Each structure stands twice: as structure tokens, then as C-alpha cells.
Image: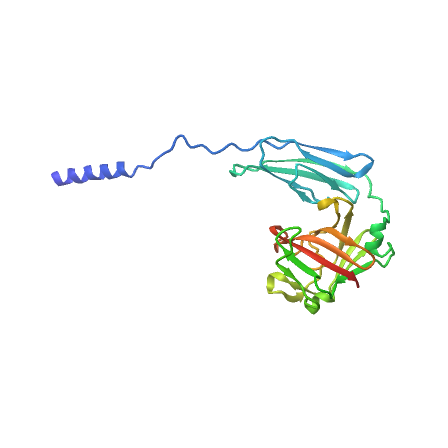
Length: 277
């Protein structure tokens, strides 16, 4: 009988010892407030809007701007260009570094008309005087066709030599047509895939639109904006390109390195040099 009592007492002590601890003082951090933002049309330009984050206490933001250029942004204030008439939704996501939640807010805008196409001198250089046949550019055979480095002005990681690229890269044409602002990657059916050991593989990028923006890049440089699924020169270069040089005989652009899913890397830039094809 005494042994039974002792065993029951032992079980009681074991149960007390295994009681889970509670921290009644622990609380999840509060979710950020719903973001607040403004949208204003650019004076005299019905295809551009200025977006501004008016929220307070938010450490990170992401604008989702489908149909616009750019189509995403993390700036407090940015200007978005809509080439085509239509209804568009602008969404702002905000979050804090503690990961306490990501609220969002959306607004709709109406763009009443397509942006007028004007054959500016720079667009004429890019598109072959705005003629119907357009103009195609290809990577130069000279040294420095492809440069890679950690930052926008440092290309110390890699510089291609004379004829140092693969043959499938030299036969690619990157073509710009002024009418409807059409971009086409004429790659002869194959592109070099940097995520597959730099092997040439079958790929059909098709046609898409492009945007040429003057003075919106780093140091006031002009920009070429391609569709998200397009590239110029090398597949892992971002679709937002700063124009470093544009003449009748030479086009030099800079763009971030990007992951296979299209996300720009935190470090890594390309400088690419093209000549007319």
C-alpha cells in the first residue's frame, strides 16, 4: 500500500515539474497602420502620375504598379508613366523590420488617352530615325562588350575580351521600332542561359513594348524600360537600363544583375556595349 502511495506522489511531482512555462509579458509587435498615399497627375502630361507615401513609422514599402513604368518601386516619391489609356490600380504595401505584418492600400486611376508618340532626336537614334523597319543592335565584338562589377561605376569583376563571347550571343539582335514602341529580341531561336551553365538553349522571347524615358536614370541619364520578361544583351541583366551612350554607331547601357525570377540582386551591375546589326 505504501509503495502505491509513493508512486502516486512521484507522478504528482513529475507533473508539476513538466508544467509549461508562460511568459505573460510577451506580446507580438503591433501591425503597421494601413498605408496612406497620394496620387497627382503631372501638369500638362495625362500619362504620368506622381505617387507619394504619406504613412508614418513604416521602414519598408513596395509599390505595385501594373501597367506602369516602373511597375514596382520602393521610393517615398516616384513618377509613374502609363503608355496606354485604361484603368489602373496602384497598391502600396508597408512593413516593419520586425515582420509584424504587411498591410496595404489601393487606389484606381484612369488614363484617358494613349501617350503621344514624338520622334525625339534620341528615339530617332535608338529606332533608326523612327522608320517602320526599326533598328537592331547587337553586342560588339570589341573588348568590353560585357562588363560586370559590384556597383554602378565599378566593373572590376569581369570584362569580355575581343571576340570573347559565345557565337549565339553575337547573332542576337535587339530591335526597337518607333511605331507602337515595339521591342523584339531576335535571337535566332536560342539564348545563352546564365542559370544553366551559360549554355545556349531554345527560347522565344517574342515581341513586347518598351519605354524611353529622358533624364530619369542615375546621374540624370536616360532610361530604356523593357517588359519584365525581356532582356537586352544578357539574360540576367535587369529590364531597366540606364543609357550611358547613344549615337548612330554605338549604344552603351547599364543595368542590375537579376535572379532567374526577375528580382534584381542587391549587388552586381552590367555595362553592355552594342553596335548596329
